[in-house]
Length: 215
Ligand code: AMP
Image (cartoon, rainbow, N blue to C red; front, side):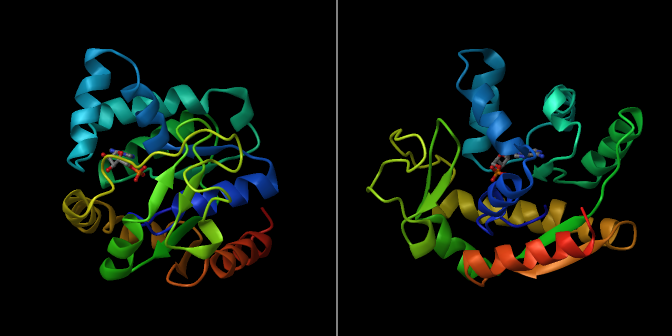
C-alpha cells in the first residue's frame, strides 16, 4: 500500500486485514514499538521520526525480515508504509525471493497535499492496539472522546502529526516514495484509488480490486 501521509493506509489496511484474516504490517508501527524501548537505537529512531525523515534502509530491512519470518505471514499480509524508496523496493524483492513469496498487487491511495494536511491534525492513535481514529472524520471518531473503541486505552497524538513535520513528510513522499509508482506500475498489478472519498467508499473500491484479483 503506497500513499502520502494521512491518506488512510493504516485505516484501510486494518479493515482489509480484518476481512481477510491476514496480518497488517505497518513499518511505522514496528518503528514506534522500537522507540518505546529505552535503547540507543530507540532514541535515535525516535529523533528521526519526530522530524519526519526516513529511517535507514538497513534498519528497515532488518525489522521487516524479522516480522515476515513469523508464522502468521504465511498466507499473505498487507504491507503498509514500505517500501518508501527505490532501494527498499529492490531489497524487498530480494527478501521475497529468499522467502519464496511474491508481491500480488500494489495499491496507491492518492490524496492531495491540502486534504492530507487537514486530516493530519485530527488524527489520534491507540498506542496499545494501534487502531487509528480521527476526530475530523465522522466514520473514524472514537465513541468516547480520547478512548480507544477496541481496547479502551487512552488515545495519543503522534509526535510527527503536526503541520511543520507534515510538510517534510509530504516532501519526502514526493521525492522518495512517489517515484515508486513508475517502478511498480508496469511490474505488478497496480491500482490507484482516490482517497479523498469517504473511508467506506475507499474500502469498497479496495475490496473490489482484491476480489477482481481473486486474492
Ligand atoms: P507512517 O506510520 O507510515 O506514517 O511512518 C511514520 C514515520 O516512520 C515516517 O515518517 C518515517 O520516519 C518512519 N518510517 C515508516 N516506514 C518507513 C520506511 N519504510 N522507511 C523509512 N522510514 C519509515
